Picture 1: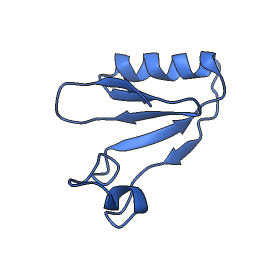
Picture 2: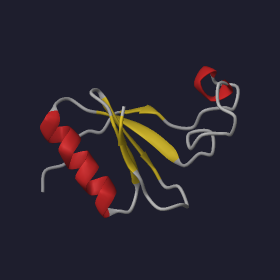
Picture 3: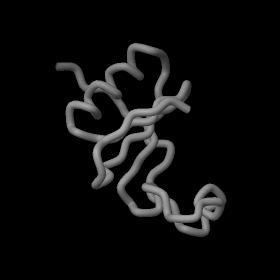
Picture 4: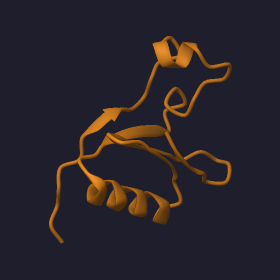
Length: 80
């Protein structure tokens, strides 16, 4: 198996972060259980999504990144 670099573009966010301040409840980033992974193209995006789902993570799919988190509720999948 060939290893590849993974670029995390967002991890933990303070509750004072501009994105988190707009939320009524702290999001998964503010809870310290989420990360956003940069992607370059559909093949890389698909691989990250497949691995995250296989590990039971929740996944949000965007053009330039994939959000992954380990929320305690039933895992969910969504698109931005």
